[in-house]
Image 1 (cartoon, one colour):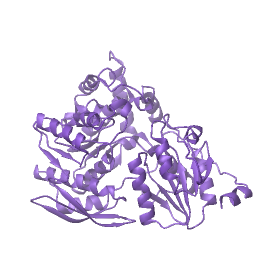
Image 2 (cartoon, one colour):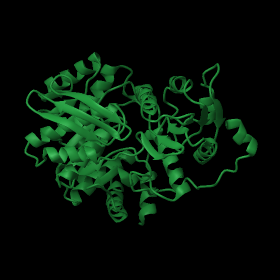
Image 3 (tube, helix red, strand yellow):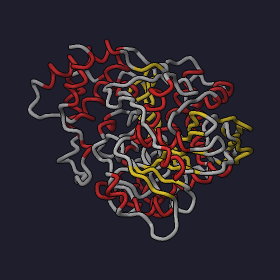
Image 4 (cartoon, helix red, strand yellow):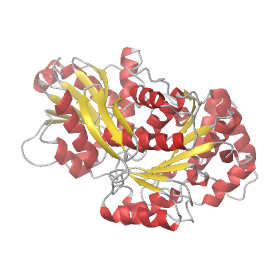
Length: 470
């Protein structure tokens, strides 16, 4: 195999992420399948220590902060996350580097030989998870930070034996699969809590917290709750990030600089600091300086990311009501502008009317488009949910390229263009922008695509269209 062939082989397996209404049951999400795969690979997930993270909001940013700090401590950590922005190889990294194509091919060839002997057909995510766990083992990482894909209890990653677990903020998401109450969702997410293993928990709604506390007590897992056992205070918020102080009854981390934007990153940083402090108490060689450097230099693209100025091009994966409120707050807090141009695309299973209601009063122009993800809502479907009454000029584009080109061509130098609604939409805009200018984004993220589904083509804009937009 070469890399494209190995990738296409994996993509031939069922991708449950493309389905919107599948019961979250053992019949579909079968951990015994994952155990069988791992057993055939030599149980690689037991070769290193693990920090396991579940939640609705903030788990990716929290994982990135922990991994960044472990790198600062010289520990060569593994990092397993999903989804990816530009290439599947982003999902599994060692010491900050994406899995090399040669290793990817080697691992897929091993998996292919195993799959041919299996009495069942694994899913894409099961194979990716097995590949990631195998890669961390052959690279002999001492510790890996592993983000849950969906839910927790039946997620493919939940075969690990973690040293520490984290449950970030919970919300009503994937309700058709995980359940339509916060207690249901907490029960599924809390499925990663292991007997005797400490769990760090973000502040939750009472019904969610009650369920997590029940699970922790049942499994005799020490529960460290933010807001009760640990506290935080935002010291300063700037366009470059924020400063936060975090403390417990016994220890304090004062004025920690966090390079990620958004007030919500204060809680994510607190979760990371508590997790790192707990690892430190377990004997891991992590200093306070490592923690400060890890959060100061952490990078997590497509989350309130600025690609350019004049006009400002700003993108974020906000796809929930809460995240969209935070995004709008950040725009007005840090980036004064004359006109706001929104590029909006969203998955079909999201609360589209509510998201549009939030954006409607603020946008001067609204460019509706879609990513290439199978769950993406069509522009026509989004149009059906537009609010009534006076609002922005609305344009539809079948291609992200067209939406970005026209937004850039019609925006004034003091305007702001914001791409939001989906992490897949944000990634597509990022990719088109990189094609347009032939350079990396300012955060120096490794830009590479698996499948060149975006072919840059300049959009010719008629003079009357420019005048209309202005």
